[in-house]
Structure formats: C-alpha cells, structure tokens
Image (cartoon, rainbow, N blue to C red; front, side, top):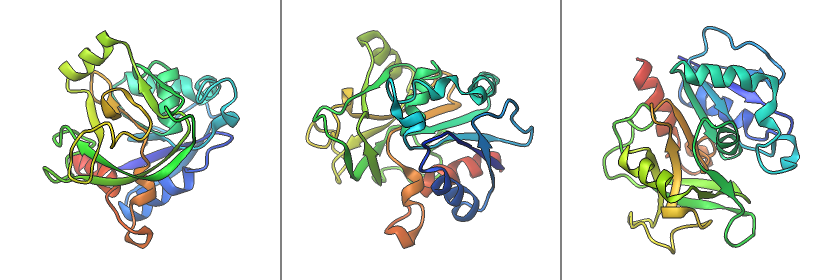
Length: 230
C-alpha cells in the first residue's frame, strides 16, 4: 500500500509519519504539498499529520481546512478511501466536517506532552486489526486543544454506531477521570466516521512506532492498514 502525507505550513510530525509508514511498517509513502490540487491515483491512505498548521491562528485546523489540497482530501474520503488525522490532523478533519464534534482547549488550559494509555474499543477495524484483544496502548500526546466535545445526540450516535475507537484509560485499562489528560467527553481519544474510513485521534502513534524511541505500540495502527490492504 502507499501512504500520502500532507504537509501544511507548520506541520511538524510529517517526517515522523513518513518514517513510521515507510520504514517501520515497510510501506511506500510520499509527501503531498498543501497547495497540490490533485492526489496521485496510487495513494491508498492520506495522513493529515500533527503540528501547528498555519500557526493555529483563529483556532487549530481552521485555516488548513481551506488549503487547496483539502478539497481533494474531502473527495478522497467521501469516495470511501482512507484518511487518518493525527492531533492537528484530527482538528482539521472536524473543521472540514469529515468527523463530528470539535477539539477545545485542554481542561487545564495547559499544553500537555506526555505518554497516555489507550483502550481500543473495537479491534476488528481497518485501523485496529493488528492490536491484540485486551492490549492497552501506550502512546504520546502533545497538544493544547485536545479536549473532544460534541453534543449529547452526537455522542449517543458515536456510541451506538461503534465510532469511538480509542478512550483514555489507566495502565490497567480503566476508563476513569484521572486517566483523562485533557477533559475529553467520555475519555474519547479517537473516533471514526459513520462509514469507518476516516479516523481522527489526538495521540501520536507515529511517535512511538520504533523500539529505539522506547516502544512501538503506535505501529499497530499502521500495520493494521497494511494488513487490511494485503
């Protein structure tokens, strides 16, 4: 399979995503510039990486949503192809209405950078099939606006349709207030759209996909996609 990694002004995890996909998951990958108006036909999955696109002016992801390439990313997603938004990329996906809800300031109003633990709610998706049942993932976060919020009807719909893929939890897998780093409603750390081809998650799997970095739990996300296409 082949990954396409969008580079916005202010992206700072684009090379991390490139290394995690091209080296760690042994797949093809290429960068896509934010001003591109076409997506190569051989791209199977687009990654909107973490960072501070356009300096996070207005609000995170609000300007990147209007980059020329985003029209094609929306078409790509609406055609059923796979898109992953990581951290700032998740914020861009909500701004583009490819995912419901919004990401607000962290409850503490502080930027948070640390490892967190994730409970996977469904290990039978294209994004999670490589995650062993019951495994708690340790993956870093680095954000100031990761507090996921949506209205009650949207949250009910996400739960009813099994669209919540990841929740913040304790190392033992308990979904508790203490394990929630940013105040996200119901400890939500990652969701998919109704058709299951668009994933947004605040934690950074690309930053822990190599044992030289202290662990490779994040690699499960990328290997799941490789499994799906193979």
